[in-house]
Image 1: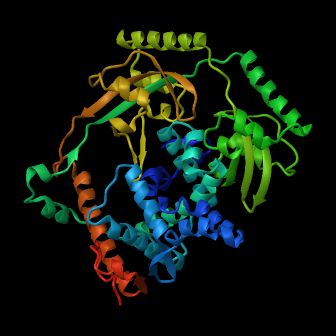
Image 2: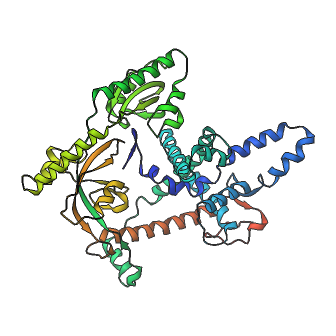
Length: 484
């Protein structure tokens, strides 16, 4: 799994696009709406006709779940999000959209009872992931601000609670089903009489070995980067500008640049060791750290706050540029290496162990590993491989070694690489003997969905529900919403 600079994204963070595409998006416009409401309270009486009509409908309470209100504006915002992303709900959306919000509120209530938590660091990372996704979809930061009618800082604020709530609900679901298991006999029984076209299709999976070489960076380029960072420190100390401003303009960490270089409260173990050693020794928020080199490049750091065994800092990252000459040298070296392999001087696995710069794979003879929600595996679906690797592997046969190519590793550095296709299992219909885990996951997922469905039905029975009369004859997934 990829790191966004130092914080390792959890599986929940990795699923942010899927989660926030649903209920977590529904109140994105609430900050703007709340500001309009505050404005309406202060206008002169003659202006009320201009302001109030816009809010009369938007502020209508249409459902109450426990002591939580669902506004019509919440539903319309969720509807707009579904339409923008081309998604549809089964049944009548006028009923299913408020129902979806209501179900989330049930999970949030239980999460509070069970003391489920989401850290500020996780929220910060998730919000940045979502904002970056939107920017990639809409084209630019400016276009996103224009579309949302608010600056990026306000967008972040409006997303904070939405993302937090989506994660709390998701973790509550996971806790509810964590003890559900299925036996091999249940799996066999489930698929025994299933038509062949209903049996799960297993996509092509491959195992890949890799050797990388990091192009050499001349001392002149390293000194250039250090001089830039020294210049930033000098400008901040003279009061010419702020650390945050320089981070937004010059930092090369995509996960924190837009937030002025800020990393939220983070434990030592989640940071690059060299970075952590300097950051945790800072004591004065008015001072800037010395230049520190990490796996990602060179940094300067400013302390914001310490809280127990966690630290909150901002930083500026600068990466030395790799010259084409250095890249060509790395490519030529690897091409020579593959020629010697072809001549039988040594194997790919031996070269990976003794020559590769990739510390994540060289101890395992170059074999790449895929971190998934279910654990660590050497098998990759093509879409899970780094883009550059997938592009090369697609055309190879088992046992082939690729020509040398360049790629960006998971630390954001340009490296030269060669890969070997160790194994390939073509896409096929799952079988009990070859794909038991895949078939087990299907049955387990069904059992969990059935359990969650029954849990929601029982939770509805024990929760106060009220709704406007026009919703009482609606088409709902769950029974029991109408209690009056």
